[in-house]
Image (tube, rainbow, N blue to C red):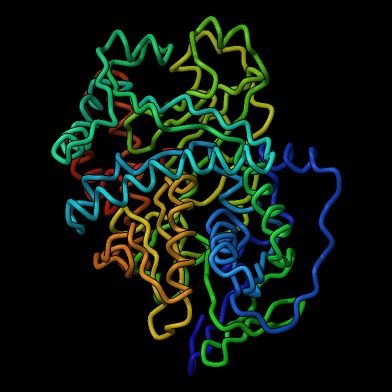
Length: 481
Protein backbone atom coordinates (compact mmCIF):
# COMPACT_ATOMS: atom_id res chain seq x y z
CA UNK A 1 0.00 0.00 0.00
CA UNK A 2 1.23 3.46 -0.76
CA UNK A 3 0.16 7.06 -0.88
CA UNK A 4 1.11 9.71 -3.40
CA UNK A 5 0.03 13.34 -3.62
CA UNK A 6 -3.20 12.89 -1.70
CA UNK A 7 -4.13 9.61 -3.34
CA UNK A 8 -4.84 6.83 -0.87
CA UNK A 9 -4.14 3.52 -2.55
CA UNK A 10 -5.79 0.55 -0.95
CA UNK A 11 -5.12 -3.15 -0.88
CA UNK A 12 -8.17 -5.23 -1.86
CA UNK A 13 -10.35 -5.54 1.20
CA UNK A 14 -8.51 -2.85 3.15
CA UNK A 15 -11.55 -0.71 3.85
CA UNK A 16 -14.15 -3.46 3.60
CA UNK A 17 -14.65 -7.14 4.23
CA UNK A 18 -14.56 -9.07 0.99
CA UNK A 19 -17.82 -10.43 -0.36
CA UNK A 20 -18.56 -14.13 -0.18
CA UNK A 21 -17.69 -14.45 3.51
CA UNK A 22 -19.37 -17.10 5.65
CA UNK A 23 -22.45 -15.49 7.15
CA UNK A 24 -22.80 -15.38 10.90
CA UNK A 25 -25.66 -17.02 12.78
CA UNK A 26 -27.08 -13.52 13.24
CA UNK A 27 -26.90 -12.44 9.61
CA UNK A 28 -28.34 -15.69 8.25
CA UNK A 29 -31.43 -15.18 10.39
CA UNK A 30 -31.72 -11.48 9.68
CA UNK A 31 -31.62 -12.09 5.92
CA UNK A 32 -34.13 -14.95 6.16
CA UNK A 33 -36.59 -12.58 7.83
CA UNK A 34 -36.39 -9.96 5.08
CA UNK A 35 -39.21 -10.06 2.55
CA UNK A 36 -37.07 -8.85 -0.33
CA UNK A 37 -33.56 -7.58 -0.92
CA UNK A 38 -32.75 -4.00 -1.83
CA UNK A 39 -31.76 -3.47 -5.48
CA UNK A 40 -28.17 -2.59 -6.32
CA UNK A 41 -27.88 1.17 -6.48
CA UNK A 42 -25.71 2.73 -9.23
CA UNK A 43 -22.39 4.10 -7.99
CA UNK A 44 -22.01 7.49 -9.67
CA UNK A 45 -22.64 11.13 -9.00
CA UNK A 46 -21.68 13.92 -6.62
CA UNK A 47 -22.69 13.93 -2.97
CA UNK A 48 -22.32 16.18 0.02
CA UNK A 49 -21.18 13.29 2.22
CA UNK A 50 -19.84 9.84 1.43
CA UNK A 51 -19.70 7.22 4.17
CA UNK A 52 -17.49 4.18 3.57
CA UNK A 53 -18.82 1.22 5.55
CA UNK A 54 -22.34 -0.11 6.03
CA UNK A 55 -22.10 -1.13 9.68
CA UNK A 56 -23.28 0.60 12.84
CA UNK A 57 -20.86 3.53 12.76
CA UNK A 58 -21.42 4.32 9.11
CA UNK A 59 -25.21 3.99 9.27
CA UNK A 60 -25.60 5.97 12.51
CA UNK A 61 -23.41 8.68 10.96
CA UNK A 62 -25.53 8.83 7.80
CA UNK A 63 -28.74 8.96 9.85
CA UNK A 64 -27.40 11.70 12.12
CA UNK A 65 -26.27 13.80 9.16
CA UNK A 66 -29.74 13.55 7.60
CA UNK A 67 -31.35 14.42 10.94
CA UNK A 68 -29.27 17.59 11.17
CA UNK A 69 -29.28 18.50 7.49
CA UNK A 70 -32.31 16.83 5.83
CA UNK A 71 -31.47 18.21 2.39
CA UNK A 72 -27.94 16.77 2.36
CA UNK A 73 -27.06 14.20 -0.30
CA UNK A 74 -25.55 11.24 1.56
CA UNK A 75 -24.23 8.00 0.11
CA UNK A 76 -23.03 4.88 1.96
CA UNK A 77 -20.64 2.51 0.18
CA UNK A 78 -20.46 -1.10 1.40
CA UNK A 79 -18.28 -3.77 -0.20
CA UNK A 80 -20.54 -6.66 0.77
CA UNK A 81 -23.94 -6.07 2.38
CA UNK A 82 -24.86 -3.93 5.38
CA UNK A 83 -24.15 -5.84 8.57
CA UNK A 84 -21.69 -8.27 6.99
CA UNK A 85 -18.72 -6.97 8.98
CA UNK A 86 -18.28 -6.67 12.74
CA UNK A 87 -21.79 -5.24 13.14
CA UNK A 88 -23.27 -8.61 12.21
CA UNK A 89 -20.53 -10.80 13.71
CA UNK A 90 -20.27 -9.67 17.33
CA UNK A 91 -21.63 -11.43 20.42
CA UNK A 92 -24.69 -9.19 20.68
CA UNK A 93 -23.71 -7.18 23.78
CA UNK A 94 -24.85 -3.53 23.94
CA UNK A 95 -22.72 -2.02 26.66
CA UNK A 96 -21.81 1.27 28.28
CA UNK A 97 -18.25 2.58 28.60
CA UNK A 98 -18.03 2.59 32.41
CA UNK A 99 -15.67 -0.39 32.40
CA UNK A 100 -13.28 1.67 30.24
CA UNK A 101 -13.25 4.59 32.68
CA UNK A 102 -9.77 3.92 34.15
CA UNK A 103 -8.28 4.03 30.62
CA UNK A 104 -10.31 7.12 29.78
CA UNK A 105 -9.09 9.02 32.83
CA UNK A 106 -5.50 8.57 31.63
CA UNK A 107 -6.20 10.83 28.65
CA UNK A 108 -9.24 12.92 29.62
CA UNK A 109 -10.36 15.16 32.44
CA UNK A 110 -12.92 13.77 34.92
CA UNK A 111 -15.57 16.06 33.41
CA UNK A 112 -14.87 14.85 29.87
CA UNK A 113 -14.80 11.22 31.00
CA UNK A 114 -18.10 11.55 32.84
CA UNK A 115 -19.74 13.21 29.82
CA UNK A 116 -18.57 10.49 27.41
CA UNK A 117 -19.52 7.57 29.64
CA UNK A 118 -22.91 9.14 30.38
CA UNK A 119 -23.51 9.55 26.64
CA UNK A 120 -22.64 5.88 26.05
CA UNK A 121 -25.04 4.85 28.80
CA UNK A 122 -27.82 7.02 27.37
CA UNK A 123 -27.15 5.54 23.92
CA UNK A 124 -28.50 2.17 25.05
CA UNK A 125 -31.94 3.60 25.73
CA UNK A 126 -31.81 5.56 22.47
CA UNK A 127 -31.02 2.41 20.49
CA UNK A 128 -33.95 0.63 22.16
CA UNK A 129 -36.26 3.55 21.36
CA UNK A 130 -35.05 3.60 17.75
CA UNK A 131 -35.87 -0.10 17.38
CA UNK A 132 -39.33 0.40 18.89
CA UNK A 133 -40.10 3.46 16.77
CA UNK A 134 -39.06 1.82 13.50
CA UNK A 135 -40.32 -1.72 14.20
CA UNK A 136 -36.85 -3.27 14.11
CA UNK A 137 -37.29 -6.74 15.63
CA UNK A 138 -33.77 -6.83 17.05
CA UNK A 139 -34.64 -8.84 20.19
CA UNK A 140 -33.40 -5.99 22.37
CA UNK A 141 -33.25 -7.17 26.00
CA UNK A 142 -32.09 -4.68 28.63
CA UNK A 143 -31.24 -7.36 31.20
CA UNK A 144 -27.87 -5.98 32.29
CA UNK A 145 -24.28 -7.19 32.28
CA UNK A 146 -22.73 -9.60 34.78
CA UNK A 147 -18.94 -9.14 34.99
CA UNK A 148 -17.55 -12.15 36.82
CA UNK A 149 -14.36 -13.84 37.95
CA UNK A 150 -14.25 -17.48 36.88
CA UNK A 151 -11.14 -18.27 38.94
CA UNK A 152 -9.37 -16.72 41.92
CA UNK A 153 -6.78 -15.03 39.70
CA UNK A 154 -9.54 -12.83 38.20
CA UNK A 155 -11.00 -11.61 41.48
CA UNK A 156 -11.41 -7.83 41.78
CA UNK A 157 -10.61 -7.23 38.10
CA UNK A 158 -13.40 -4.65 38.26
CA UNK A 159 -12.04 -2.79 41.29
CA UNK A 160 -10.35 -0.02 39.24
CA UNK A 161 -13.59 0.68 37.35
CA UNK A 162 -15.68 0.62 40.53
CA UNK A 163 -13.29 2.99 42.32
CA UNK A 164 -13.12 5.36 39.34
CA UNK A 165 -16.90 5.59 38.98
CA UNK A 166 -17.35 6.09 42.72
CA UNK A 167 -14.90 9.01 42.68
CA UNK A 168 -16.97 10.63 39.92
CA UNK A 169 -20.12 10.26 41.99
CA UNK A 170 -21.78 7.56 39.89
CA UNK A 171 -22.43 3.93 40.79
CA UNK A 172 -23.25 1.88 37.70
CA UNK A 173 -21.89 -1.32 39.28
CA UNK A 174 -23.54 -3.37 42.02
CA UNK A 175 -20.93 -5.40 43.91
CA UNK A 176 -22.14 -8.96 44.43
CA UNK A 177 -21.18 -11.51 47.02
CA UNK A 178 -19.65 -14.73 45.63
CA UNK A 179 -22.94 -16.55 46.25
CA UNK A 180 -24.97 -13.84 44.49
CA UNK A 181 -22.62 -13.80 41.50
CA UNK A 182 -22.68 -17.60 41.32
CA UNK A 183 -26.48 -17.69 41.47
CA UNK A 184 -26.87 -15.11 38.69
CA UNK A 185 -24.32 -16.73 36.40
CA UNK A 186 -25.51 -20.26 37.07
CA UNK A 187 -21.88 -21.47 37.03
CA UNK A 188 -20.10 -23.10 39.96
CA UNK A 189 -16.86 -21.69 38.52
CA UNK A 190 -17.94 -18.13 39.39
CA UNK A 191 -16.11 -16.83 42.47
CA UNK A 192 -17.20 -13.18 42.41
CA UNK A 193 -18.59 -10.42 40.26
CA UNK A 194 -20.38 -7.13 39.76
CA UNK A 195 -23.61 -6.31 37.94
CA UNK A 196 -24.36 -3.34 35.66
CA UNK A 197 -28.09 -3.04 35.07
CA UNK A 198 -28.14 -0.71 32.04
CA UNK A 199 -26.42 -3.01 29.52
CA UNK A 200 -28.39 -5.06 27.00
CA UNK A 201 -28.22 -7.79 24.40
CA UNK A 202 -29.48 -7.61 20.83
CA UNK A 203 -29.72 -9.50 17.55
CA UNK A 204 -26.87 -7.44 16.07
CA UNK A 205 -27.38 -8.18 12.36
CA UNK A 206 -31.10 -7.38 12.56
CA UNK A 207 -30.17 -4.05 14.14
CA UNK A 208 -27.69 -3.31 11.33
CA UNK A 209 -30.17 -4.29 8.60
CA UNK A 210 -32.85 -2.21 10.32
CA UNK A 211 -30.58 0.83 10.39
CA UNK A 212 -29.95 0.41 6.66
CA UNK A 213 -33.70 0.21 5.95
CA UNK A 214 -34.45 3.38 7.92
CA UNK A 215 -31.51 5.19 6.29
CA UNK A 216 -32.91 4.37 2.84
CA UNK A 217 -36.35 5.57 3.93
CA UNK A 218 -34.79 8.90 4.95
CA UNK A 219 -33.13 9.41 1.58
CA UNK A 220 -29.65 7.97 2.14
CA UNK A 221 -28.37 6.14 -0.93
CA UNK A 222 -26.82 2.83 0.09
CA UNK A 223 -24.66 1.05 -2.45
CA UNK A 224 -23.90 -2.52 -1.45
CA UNK A 225 -21.36 -4.75 -3.20
CA UNK A 226 -19.30 -1.67 -4.02
CA UNK A 227 -15.78 -2.22 -2.62
CA UNK A 228 -13.62 0.89 -2.54
CA UNK A 229 -10.41 0.57 -4.55
CA UNK A 230 -8.83 3.98 -4.01
CA UNK A 231 -9.54 7.47 -2.78
CA UNK A 232 -8.26 10.70 -4.30
CA UNK A 233 -7.92 12.77 -1.16
CA UNK A 234 -7.29 16.00 -3.11
CA UNK A 235 -10.16 15.68 -5.55
CA UNK A 236 -12.36 13.87 -2.99
CA UNK A 237 -13.13 11.13 -5.49
CA UNK A 238 -13.88 7.60 -4.31
CA UNK A 239 -13.31 4.86 -6.85
CA UNK A 240 -15.12 1.55 -6.43
CA UNK A 241 -15.32 -1.64 -8.44
CA UNK A 242 -18.69 -0.44 -9.76
CA UNK A 243 -18.00 3.22 -10.45
CA UNK A 244 -16.77 6.45 -8.88
CA UNK A 245 -18.34 9.27 -6.92
CA UNK A 246 -17.25 12.68 -5.69
CA UNK A 247 -18.06 14.04 -2.26
CA UNK A 248 -17.66 17.18 -0.22
CA UNK A 249 -16.66 15.18 2.84
CA UNK A 250 -15.74 11.56 3.43
CA UNK A 251 -16.25 9.40 6.53
CA UNK A 252 -14.31 6.12 6.85
CA UNK A 253 -16.31 3.81 9.10
CA UNK A 254 -14.99 0.33 8.47
CA UNK A 255 -13.52 -0.41 11.87
CA UNK A 256 -10.86 -3.16 11.81
CA UNK A 257 -10.49 -2.98 8.03
CA UNK A 258 -8.68 0.35 8.38
CA UNK A 259 -5.82 -1.13 10.41
CA UNK A 260 -3.51 -1.41 7.40
CA UNK A 261 -3.83 2.27 6.43
CA UNK A 262 -0.39 3.86 6.95
CA UNK A 263 -1.74 6.50 9.33
CA UNK A 264 -3.37 3.86 11.56
CA UNK A 265 -0.88 1.02 11.30
CA UNK A 266 0.77 1.77 14.66
CA UNK A 267 -2.51 2.66 16.39
CA UNK A 268 -4.44 -0.59 15.91
CA UNK A 269 -3.87 -4.29 16.33
CA UNK A 270 -6.46 -6.71 14.95
CA UNK A 271 -7.26 -10.05 16.53
CA UNK A 272 -10.08 -12.53 15.90
CA UNK A 273 -12.94 -13.15 18.27
CA UNK A 274 -14.72 -16.50 17.83
CA UNK A 275 -18.39 -17.19 18.52
CA UNK A 276 -20.71 -20.20 18.52
CA UNK A 277 -24.47 -20.56 18.80
CA UNK A 278 -25.71 -23.82 20.30
CA UNK A 279 -28.72 -25.93 19.51
CA UNK A 280 -31.74 -24.63 21.44
CA UNK A 281 -31.98 -26.13 24.92
CA UNK A 282 -34.42 -23.94 26.90
CA UNK A 283 -35.02 -26.47 29.66
CA UNK A 284 -31.32 -27.02 30.31
CA UNK A 285 -30.64 -23.28 30.47
CA UNK A 286 -33.63 -22.72 32.76
CA UNK A 287 -32.30 -25.39 35.12
CA UNK A 288 -28.95 -23.55 35.25
CA UNK A 289 -30.83 -20.39 36.15
CA UNK A 290 -29.69 -18.18 33.27
CA UNK A 291 -31.95 -15.19 32.65
CA UNK A 292 -32.67 -14.64 28.93
CA UNK A 293 -30.79 -11.63 27.60
CA UNK A 294 -28.38 -11.29 30.53
CA UNK A 295 -24.90 -10.49 29.16
CA UNK A 296 -22.13 -12.34 31.01
CA UNK A 297 -18.37 -12.14 30.61
CA UNK A 298 -15.48 -13.22 32.78
CA UNK A 299 -12.28 -11.32 33.53
CA UNK A 300 -9.66 -13.33 31.70
CA UNK A 301 -7.61 -11.67 28.97
CA UNK A 302 -8.83 -14.29 26.47
CA UNK A 303 -12.33 -13.45 27.61
CA UNK A 304 -15.36 -15.73 27.63
CA UNK A 305 -18.59 -13.84 26.89
CA UNK A 306 -22.03 -15.34 26.48
CA UNK A 307 -25.76 -14.99 26.87
CA UNK A 308 -28.91 -17.04 26.62
CA UNK A 309 -31.37 -16.10 23.89
CA UNK A 310 -35.13 -16.26 24.40
CA UNK A 311 -35.38 -19.38 22.20
CA UNK A 312 -33.00 -21.32 24.43
CA UNK A 313 -29.88 -20.87 22.30
CA UNK A 314 -26.61 -20.14 24.10
CA UNK A 315 -24.37 -17.72 22.22
CA UNK A 316 -20.82 -18.18 23.51
CA UNK A 317 -17.84 -16.13 22.36
CA UNK A 318 -14.16 -16.13 23.17
CA UNK A 319 -11.63 -13.41 22.48
CA UNK A 320 -7.97 -13.73 21.69
CA UNK A 321 -8.02 -15.69 18.45
CA UNK A 322 -5.80 -15.31 15.38
CA UNK A 323 -3.62 -12.22 14.96
CA UNK A 324 -3.28 -10.29 11.72
CA UNK A 325 0.02 -9.25 10.16
CA UNK A 326 0.28 -5.58 9.25
CA UNK A 327 -3.42 -5.06 9.93
CA UNK A 328 -4.41 -6.98 6.79
CA UNK A 329 -7.43 -9.13 7.46
CA UNK A 330 -7.28 -12.56 5.79
CA UNK A 331 -10.29 -14.56 4.69
CA UNK A 332 -10.17 -16.82 7.73
CA UNK A 333 -11.38 -13.87 9.83
CA UNK A 334 -14.71 -14.10 7.98
CA UNK A 335 -15.08 -17.86 8.01
CA UNK A 336 -16.60 -20.41 10.30
CA UNK A 337 -14.77 -20.25 13.61
CA UNK A 338 -11.52 -22.27 13.69
CA UNK A 339 -12.00 -22.28 17.47
CA UNK A 340 -15.44 -23.89 17.52
CA UNK A 341 -14.27 -26.84 19.62
CA UNK A 342 -12.32 -24.55 21.98
CA UNK A 343 -15.46 -22.51 22.61
CA UNK A 344 -17.47 -25.66 23.28
CA UNK A 345 -14.84 -26.87 25.76
CA UNK A 346 -14.91 -23.55 27.61
CA UNK A 347 -18.72 -23.47 27.72
CA UNK A 348 -18.83 -27.05 29.06
CA UNK A 349 -16.14 -26.28 31.63
CA UNK A 350 -18.20 -23.41 32.99
CA UNK A 351 -21.47 -25.34 32.63
CA UNK A 352 -20.86 -29.10 32.92
CA UNK A 353 -24.60 -29.80 32.53
CA UNK A 354 -24.31 -28.55 28.92
CA UNK A 355 -21.82 -31.31 28.03
CA UNK A 356 -24.25 -32.82 25.52
CA UNK A 357 -25.07 -29.49 23.85
CA UNK A 358 -23.51 -28.95 20.42
CA UNK A 359 -22.89 -25.87 18.28
CA UNK A 360 -25.19 -25.43 15.29
CA UNK A 361 -23.29 -22.39 14.02
CA UNK A 362 -19.81 -20.90 14.42
CA UNK A 363 -18.18 -17.79 13.05
CA UNK A 364 -15.46 -15.29 13.79
CA UNK A 365 -14.72 -11.65 13.15
CA UNK A 366 -11.98 -9.06 13.67
CA UNK A 367 -11.63 -6.92 16.80
CA UNK A 368 -9.57 -3.74 16.42
CA UNK A 369 -7.76 -2.89 19.63
CA UNK A 370 -6.42 0.62 19.86
CA UNK A 371 -3.16 1.46 21.56
CA UNK A 372 -5.13 3.41 24.17
CA UNK A 373 -7.94 0.88 24.62
CA UNK A 374 -10.41 3.57 23.54
CA UNK A 375 -12.14 4.35 20.25
CA UNK A 376 -11.10 7.48 18.39
CA UNK A 377 -13.00 9.75 16.01
CA UNK A 378 -10.54 11.84 14.07
CA UNK A 379 -9.51 13.62 10.92
CA UNK A 380 -7.27 11.46 8.73
CA UNK A 381 -3.84 13.13 8.98
CA UNK A 382 -3.17 15.23 5.90
CA UNK A 383 -6.81 15.12 4.76
CA UNK A 384 -8.97 17.59 6.65
CA UNK A 385 -12.17 16.55 4.83
CA UNK A 386 -11.74 12.86 5.60
CA UNK A 387 -12.97 11.66 8.99
CA UNK A 388 -12.62 8.22 10.52
CA UNK A 389 -13.62 6.12 13.50
CA UNK A 390 -11.87 3.00 14.80
CA UNK A 391 -10.48 1.32 17.90
CA UNK A 392 -13.62 0.12 19.69
CA UNK A 393 -11.48 -2.57 21.35
CA UNK A 394 -14.32 -5.06 21.64
CA UNK A 395 -17.06 -2.70 22.83
CA UNK A 396 -18.63 -1.01 19.82
CA UNK A 397 -22.35 -1.74 19.58
CA UNK A 398 -23.41 0.90 22.09
CA UNK A 399 -20.56 3.43 21.65
CA UNK A 400 -21.08 3.38 17.86
CA UNK A 401 -24.20 5.48 18.43
CA UNK A 402 -22.05 8.12 20.13
CA UNK A 403 -19.51 7.75 17.32
CA UNK A 404 -22.14 8.35 14.64
CA UNK A 405 -23.32 11.46 16.43
CA UNK A 406 -19.76 12.76 16.86
CA UNK A 407 -18.78 12.11 13.22
CA UNK A 408 -21.95 13.80 11.96
CA UNK A 409 -21.23 16.86 14.11
CA UNK A 410 -17.63 16.98 12.89
CA UNK A 411 -18.64 16.52 9.24
CA UNK A 412 -21.05 19.44 9.58
CA UNK A 413 -18.31 21.64 11.03
CA UNK A 414 -19.26 21.40 14.69
CA UNK A 415 -17.62 20.07 17.85
CA UNK A 416 -18.77 16.77 19.41
CA UNK A 417 -19.42 17.87 22.98
CA UNK A 418 -19.67 14.32 24.37
CA UNK A 419 -16.28 13.14 23.09
CA UNK A 420 -13.05 14.08 24.93
CA UNK A 421 -10.41 15.96 22.96
CA UNK A 422 -7.98 13.05 23.28
CA UNK A 423 -10.45 10.77 21.45
CA UNK A 424 -10.67 13.21 18.53
CA UNK A 425 -7.16 12.37 17.39
CA UNK A 426 -5.13 9.24 16.83
CA UNK A 427 -3.85 7.60 20.04
CA UNK A 428 -0.53 9.02 21.22
CA UNK A 429 0.65 5.57 22.28
CA UNK A 430 2.06 3.49 19.44
CA UNK A 431 2.11 -0.26 19.04
CA UNK A 432 5.33 -2.02 17.95
CA UNK A 433 6.05 -2.14 14.20
CA UNK A 434 5.87 -5.33 12.15
CA UNK A 435 7.16 -7.99 12.25
CA UNK A 436 7.84 -7.42 15.97
CA UNK A 437 4.15 -6.88 16.66
CA UNK A 438 3.08 -10.15 15.06
CA UNK A 439 5.89 -12.31 16.41
CA UNK A 440 5.69 -10.75 19.85
CA UNK A 441 1.92 -10.99 19.81
CA UNK A 442 2.06 -14.71 19.13
CA UNK A 443 4.47 -15.22 22.03
CA UNK A 444 2.44 -13.08 24.42
CA UNK A 445 -0.85 -14.69 23.43
CA UNK A 446 0.60 -18.18 24.08
CA UNK A 447 1.86 -17.04 27.48
CA UNK A 448 -1.53 -15.56 28.42
CA UNK A 449 -3.24 -18.81 27.43
CA UNK A 450 -0.86 -20.86 29.59
CA UNK A 451 -1.23 -18.44 32.51
CA UNK A 452 -5.02 -18.57 32.37
CA UNK A 453 -5.10 -22.34 31.97
CA UNK A 454 -2.96 -22.68 35.12
CA UNK A 455 -5.29 -20.32 37.02
CA UNK A 456 -8.35 -22.35 35.95
CA UNK A 457 -6.68 -25.43 37.42
CA UNK A 458 -6.06 -23.60 40.71
CA UNK A 459 -2.34 -23.24 40.09
CA UNK A 460 0.12 -20.54 39.13
CA UNK A 461 2.12 -20.26 35.92
CA UNK A 462 5.91 -19.99 35.98
CA UNK A 463 7.63 -16.65 36.50
CA UNK A 464 8.72 -16.65 32.86
CA UNK A 465 5.18 -17.26 31.57
CA UNK A 466 3.74 -14.54 33.81
CA UNK A 467 6.43 -12.09 32.70
CA UNK A 468 5.74 -12.84 29.02
CA UNK A 469 1.98 -12.44 29.54
CA UNK A 470 2.53 -9.03 31.16
CA UNK A 471 4.08 -7.74 27.92
CA UNK A 472 0.62 -7.53 26.30
CA UNK A 473 0.72 -4.02 24.73
CA UNK A 474 -3.05 -3.71 25.02
CA UNK A 475 -2.75 -4.63 28.74
CA UNK A 476 -6.09 -6.05 29.75
CA UNK A 477 -8.20 -4.30 27.11
CA UNK A 478 -10.75 -7.07 26.89
CA UNK A 479 -13.43 -7.40 24.23
CA UNK A 480 -16.77 -8.00 25.88
CA UNK A 481 -18.82 -9.08 22.87
